[in-house]
Image (cartoon, rainbow, N blue to C red; front, top):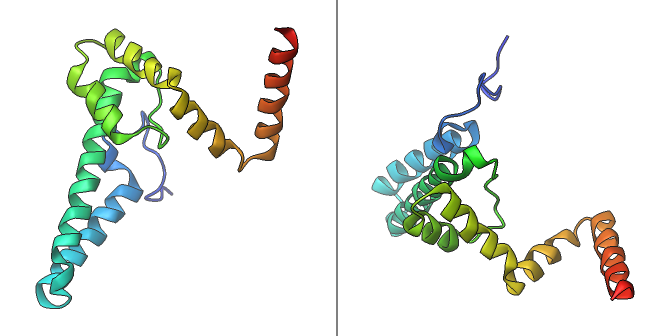
Amino acid sequence: MSSETDTPPGGYDLYLDLPEVREMKTQMAGAKLLTTFVARDQKQKTKEIERQLDDLARNVDGFYDLLGSRNWIYSGQYSTQDIETILANARSPEEAEAQLLDLYRLRENLDRWILRLRAFPTAARSIRSRRAQRLAGS
């Protein structure tokens, strides 16, 4: 027996097809309906959250349309503005990939992404060990 959270063969075609995202969209529809009758002061905020979810869906789907065949995986570590810029400016998957790699070369991105790894002590120790080895070799 299949449950709603089972991944279909071949995966999902769109970000909005993911069960978690479909559930969020259902909740947003309920919230919009609710703000029609009560909590009217939350109507604009609800619309803004829905717009942000739709923007994220366009970003994720555009990312995979352009870079999925090159085996890149969309990550929450990316700035949505950076991905929007890449999607707007890249004329080919190769150009998009080069721009994405440029994000990895920015020191502020690396520092932020490495900082997130501190939540995983084994990864943090490994990074410190590699850094020490690199410094000892130079």
